Amino acid sequence: MVDNSVYQGNPLNIDPRRITWKRCVDMNDRQLRFVTDGLGGKVNGTPREDGFDITVASEVMAIFCLATDLADLKARLARIVVAYTYAGEPVTAGQLGAAGAMAALLKDAFDPNLVQTLENNPAIIHGGPFANIAHGCNSLMATRLSLSLADYVVTEAGFGADLGAEKFLDIKCRAAHLSPNAVVLVATVRALKHHGGCPKAELGVPNTEYLKKGSANLLRHIDNLKNGYGLPVCVAINAFPTDSAEEHELLRTLCREAGVPCALSEVFAKGGEGGKELAEAVLSVMQEHTAVQFAYPDDAPLTEKIEAVCKKVYRADGITYAAAAKKALDEITRMGYGGLPVCIAKTQYSFSDDAALLGAPEGFVMNVRDVRLSAGAGFVVAIMGSIMTMPGLPKKPAAESIDVDAEGRITGLF
Image 1 (cartoon, rainbow, N blue to C red):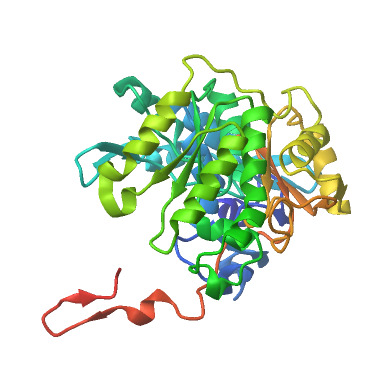
Image 2 (cartoon, rainbow, N blue to C red; image 1 turned 45 degrees about the vertical axis):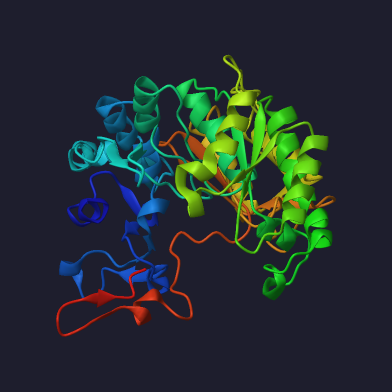
């Protein structure tokens, strides 16, 4: 609809060089990150640089997961900024006349999906926004529906607590006026040994020295959640067959010293039976009434919000801004969006914006290279480091292992 508006006389005075809305396809294809389209003459449109995002990276997915009802969904879709005019003014999906059709396409999908576990427990799977370019949580509709139906609701926030938990609390809980009764911080022996410098080939070999060194990462997450956000915390050790009893005991001891319970989770191997210890530990820390201590207030300037997350959660010494990021922040503030929360897009492998800085790094500076407005979702994205919204296939794609025999039996899917 954006390109058609430009083709049909450009009534909104859209600058083709400043169309910010990308096309979308639900597959990994690095060739589509940057494309040139509209070639082949006037009948094929206006030539311009373009690109594709995968579905989970689209602002529509973030909007879908934060909308409270169909009316709110439609209003948020209408606020999406898709381009800018030659005068630098924003052009929205509502001005294009696209919001109604978008809402109609999403109407049935907006109903949460009820499925069940192998042990017949209800589970609602609904939505999936990227946990770094967006807020990485399931839909608000699903959370509220679950809370109306069950005594206890467990929900997930994507990637580490510096990304998933921070965004769940500072974006979703703020928007929905939610406050969790407890936080379950999931850790694995393998990941913590990786943070301790253990070579990848040795992650399955018991080694308490690597584990102890890497546990600084876990302790920082605990401190952020317990003392930063003021919430009760329970650590879940997601058990692997290669873990040793000594490694599990070391983590229990470290958590005990940090003042939080720690429980072994063996649900992958044993189902519900393997989750009893964890369930009891979570119940032991749950508080009936909690109040999230957000990382920043609503009325703080965008730069102060970014600084608060970087310094309080990531423990950075400072923040620098690229010229493009400064310009974007000024423009977003001028347009009246300075009151929105911030969504930091960075690597999931480190507290910093450098994937190689493992453990609990100190003495580093975060660099904001770009800032994007997600007006419909209701947050401002600060991009740090290299964030891909269109992944490519790995060296050995899964497709190479998929086959079908003469009888029609498909193999290699799992």
